[in-house]
Length: 249
Image 1 (tube, helix red, strand yellow):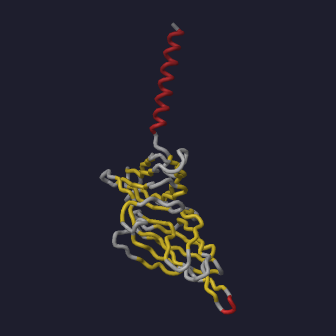
Image 2 (cartoon, one colour; image 1 turned 180 degrees about the vertical axis):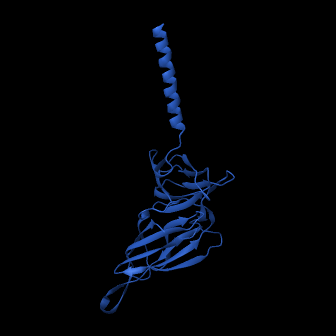
Image 3 (cartoon, helix red, strand yellow; image 1 turned 45 degrees about the vertical axis):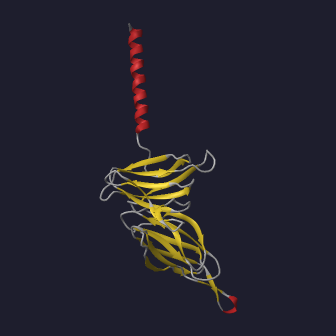
């Protein structure tokens, strides 16, 4: 009799353990931090519950596959892929670029979806870092690693703000373009900053000039919602290298 009771107790305990394991499997993954998605058409979704207009997330692309997408669910439950000006010049859904960062606001109780399309070897994966942009960080949080661009023309700084709110960012130039001065002396030139509106009819919003210190420079300010951060490095002698960070306002 005691043996039968013992077997029943063990069976009930096993059922409880299995139920607990299944509950853990259903529990949502961490909504911030490093995320990996296989390059096989897989998607990962993250549900956010916040206050006000929702939770603003910065998606930092560490590596990518082919034609990956970042999408968000609106208040009606419809998913929207981030859109912009594509390489072919048309306006439509974009593939996130490695080394770039994209901010998006997820309405309360709705989802962010990251999809990685097939590309490369079967074991390849795309990797992202999800940054909480609802709370200002205590110290600058890198969004765009050291990035080099050519001198002269306006170039993307690698940060796109699709979110519902302006975000405060900082650009630090490790080196800037230069012009030749008297006696062939190289004279550093201060970079310029502007915002490029993400829309079918684009517009540029000037944001001023960086503060120059030797061959380095600094700029900080707000990046409005629905805009791309761009830089222009005057000069003819190459050396425009910078990073972009999310900072406290």
